[in-house]
Length: 138
Image (cartoon, rainbow, N blue to C red; front, side, top):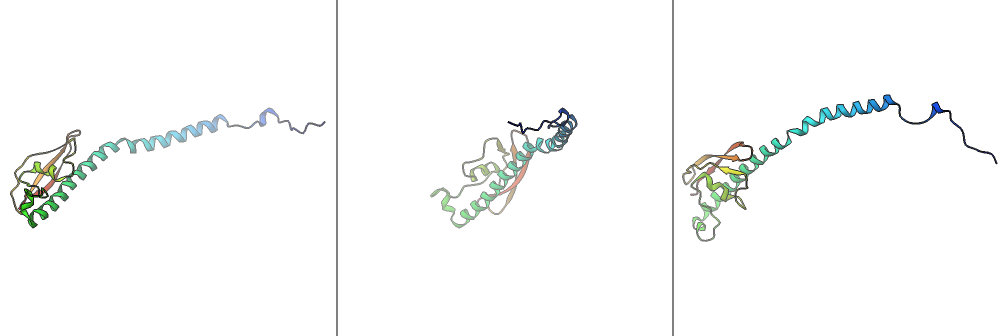
């Protein structure tokens, strides 16, 4: 019986050379050096976006509340649909479920009617602030 296997000399064995392995490691190092800084500051950006989202939600809720209260002011006591707003801190009551944990609104008086007041919303974990406007109930 004849052996059909070919014998290869030792210098023709397959595999990667040391230079090829080093080049792969260098390329991975360069990619990591470029990619890691882009992801390190994402939590700060997320907190800023969340702060802006809460402020936007309060402003939107306030617009709806002013409209509902203008149509029928008796809804304040009867159905609870109209939220009385006479202070910036009432802005949290305009959100479904209230103001999220980790946020505070600086108290400031808001005149009733079409008068708007600038209010300050603070993220207590990062001390970042943003402003939103709120209108008192008519």
